[in-house]
Image 1 (cartoon, rainbow, N blue to C red):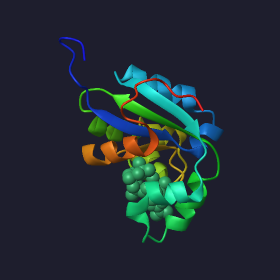
Image 2: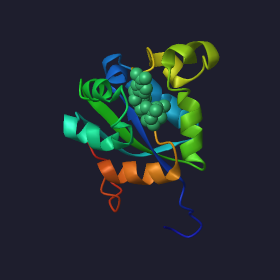
Image 3: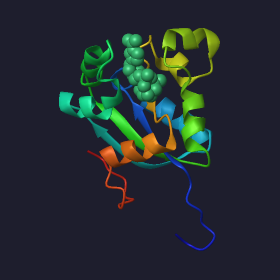
Length: 151
Ligand code: RTP
Ligand code: MG
């Protein structure tokens, strides 16, 4: 780091298959930068079943797990590292509640209200804690390297 530069908090954002399919990538990225986040890494990939099972391992015993795996493997996704003070909490606030259908009523300005459909198809992911952010960033990126990826 250069003199006077502080490490900003990092979080992991994903535009899920429904967000990519609905052509929301540019709109979402404009919202992200408009709220003062820097997008320091990004990678477009399609996950296989094993990758989704591992990424969402905390939900492996839930009734919706198989459906979640099917959804998240259904098309390409855009994975991004976002940096800003308080990035984890601020990104969660910006995406809104898990259920996009309810978000349209209770959080109409949220990203999930804008581009999601329901409890499952909610168009974006956000890390839920700094610990999760660290795990999830390492899951997708070589954390030593600060170049932009394009796959
Ligand atoms: P995410 O991890 O993707 O940011 O979402 P979240 O924290 O708001 O919600 P979480 O409880 O972690 O659930 C992960 C994803 O699983 C799908 N889901 N389906 N059918 C259901 O009841 C159900 N519940 C959750 C959603 O795609 C959710 O984002
Ligand atoms: Mg979650």
